[in-house]
Image (tube, rainbow, N blue to C red; front, side, top):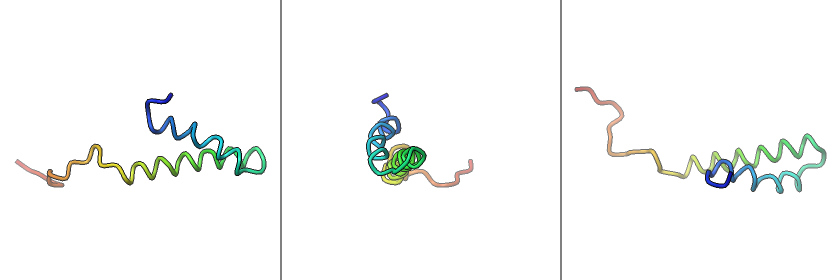
Length: 60
């Protein structure tokens, strides 16, 4: 549960969602929104998996 960034973002976002939300459904929405925002930010800022040396299209 703590090896993957996405799993950790769920657990880190939980207390913030519970603190910000006013009622139970808003707390759940805020929890998932904070986790989703962290995941999107991580995807936007990471360079893992992207190889910039390869051309977009290559034909033999």
